[in-house]
Image (tube, rainbow, N blue to C red; front, side, top):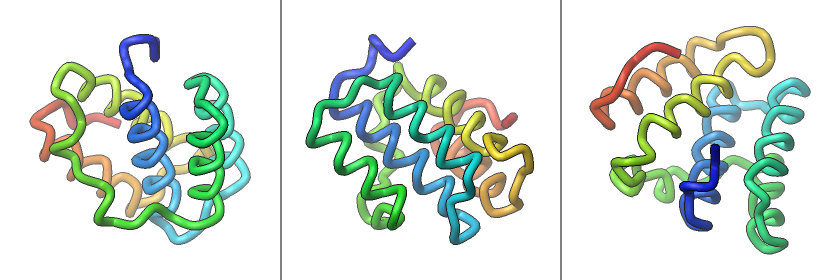
Length: 113
């Protein structure tokens, strides 16, 4: 599933997923476990893994979250993964849902989480 993503896109996906988890100003246990599974599934190298794990402790800076950097062929994949992030802890926080809807609109893709 993630084979089509290069290393930059893999890290970009984790960056966006972590930012969604932080939308309600905390990363819950369910979200953390889901993100750790994503990090494992993406098979990040040691440097990228360290960066991803840092985002579990502190949210990524907003200025590094540019939806225009998501390659068009991967946009639906990003939305699918981020939609799963939104429901990872068993509840949908309004801020996470709002972030998802805004990203979907900016990417010009589907809007269902």
